[in-house]
Structure formats: C-alpha cells, structure tokens
Amino acid sequence: QVQLVESGGGLVQPGGSLRLSCAASGFAFGSAVMSWYRQAPGKERELVASISSTGGITNYPDGMKGRFTISRDNAKNTVYLQLDSLKFEDTAVYYCRAVPIYEPTLDYWGQGTQVTVSS
Image (cartoon, rainbow, N blue to C red; front, side, top):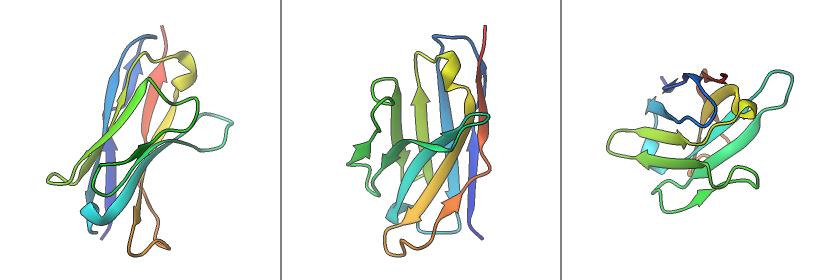
C-alpha cells in the first residue's frame, strides 16, 4: 500500500522557518520524482518545488525560488521542504506528490500538512 505522510507543519511567525518532511512507503521511492505542492484557501493547488529521483536536479517555479529548498534522502525514503523567511501568503496546506519515473501514469499524493504564518 502506497503511503505518503507529511509532517512538520504548524504555526510560525512571519520571517520564521519550518522544515516539512514526507515519509514514503509502498513504492520504489528512489525511482520517483518527488514534488511539493501547496493549496491556500480559495486558491488552486500550485507547485512549490520538485526533485529528481537521484536528487541531482531540483526545480522551483518562478516566485518560489530563494526561500524554499527541496531535498531528499533515498536511504530514508523521505523528501524534505525547507521553508525560510515565511510570509503571510505562504499559509496553505502543503502536499507531497510522487510520480514513479518508470510508471509516469501513476500519481501518489499525501494528505497534506498545514502551514500557518501568523503574528
């Protein structure tokens, strides 16, 4: 059974930092492209960052560069998202996504972890 379990969210003040984790099981984690998305209330889900199966290539959409860092540990089947210099507008539910490179029609999502930036 495939599972993606996010953790690390919470309440943080503007300018603060959080480190999100996504623990994966039930599929070949080392052969999957991993991504983080977020969805704010009333808005569409958007890509925050993605990382290749080996971790050698990362991608950040415009507007996400500079404050967020994605990384992975294939020995621990875990992908991370470091959030720095957080702003009010970063408040959202953050989701982990896995797409196996050998079965790209498959698409796994976690349940999400809430990040709230508030003073």
